[in-house]
Length: 309
Ligand code: UDP
Image 1 (cartoon, protein in one colour):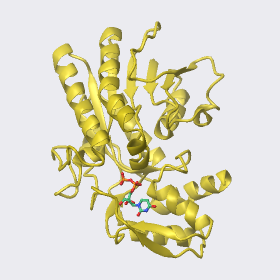
Image 2 (cartoon, helix red, strand yellow; image 1 turned 45 degrees about the horizontal axis):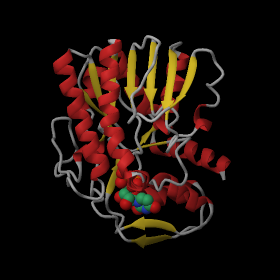
Image 3 (cartoon, protein in one colour; image 1 turned 180 degrees about the horizontal axis):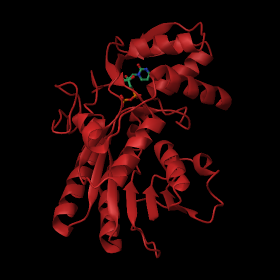
């Protein structure tokens, strides 16, 4: 297939591109390089069936080749990155989604939207299943991302109904692994860098808030299972193994044999207290579930971060 991936030079998409390349697809990797980096896909570029297009999805997208499948992933995705690029984030989720859906319509391509656990906001139920509608502050500090992604889901559903497009939505929960940006403020990379440097580990708030971390190979496995399935629907993809931020810090200190100590900093506004995917639907319908234990994934990530310092 000819496959377009927006956000193609980003962390998750570079791993997605690796897997799709192994499957012999032709890849068009589109990215504005705002938070993506060509380093992530350097090893793929130069192959004749991989093309890089530097472009921002908020502008009209013109591709002359046939396109069979579109992944729309382009967006800043870490709280620091989307708060530093708030207007671009709003536009990537809204105008960028409309532009890529319009392209899917013209090309008669199937479509997969990267949504996020952030659409559940600060959830009042746990774990979160796909039929929970969320608890989002529409004008809060995260709303440029949360609400743009919620709009993106609405746009995808509406184009699908109106133009009979085959569309799929993946709600990605916290994902970690090699090629994350080291300076975008994510908890896993922050803690690993601090631990490797024997610096204080910056726990925001009391550290009792929870997250559920999925290793990138598992997340990409789920995305490809959805792509290859007949299901045109919404799926949570993530790891239900929920831990507190304090526990994460302790595990990283132990895996890195670090002398770092935990210190507490202010909790950012609208920081969700808990997050844990209900992945029953993906297990039943996609026959997918994560396999990589946190210790194993963290060890691989620590090795990679170490190689970058
Ligand atoms: N966090 C932290 N210390 C850091 C970075 C993040 O305690 O140095 C916390 C943050 O407040 C949140 C959790 O870790 O509760 C996950 O943050 P991240 O930015 O990775 O992503 P989020 O899940 O909030 O989108």
